[in-house]
Image (cartoon, rainbow, N blue to C red):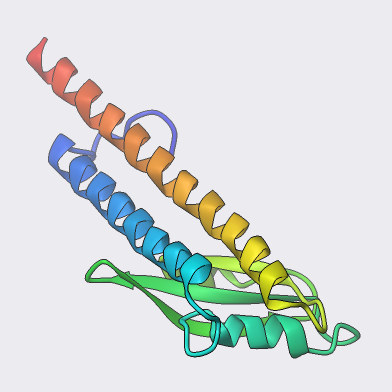
Length: 146
């Protein structure tokens, strides 16, 4: 959203910013797990299995839908797509998602690198969104004080 919405309050904006930070924190924990742990029995094992074993002649991407609940990133689903993009109602049902190209036979280290880059990008986006939202809250408070 750009500018300020007249229905926005500094309190609501600060709550939104805290939620963005909570999502980023959950994704950082998931990223640490990806880097430090074995893929087997990890939260991203299903995504790895889909990316590395799906037929690229049928499917071209796979996404992991992620919700952050009580500070923990939960993979709610992994889903393949042949072409196009996800319907908005599917995306709205999760906090975020990461999407990788299908690459039959992908090695675990390559998966960790690629998925790690996607997670890092999402973390940075949520941190930036949190900072921008806090700035809007500060601006609204300054205007109210004038």
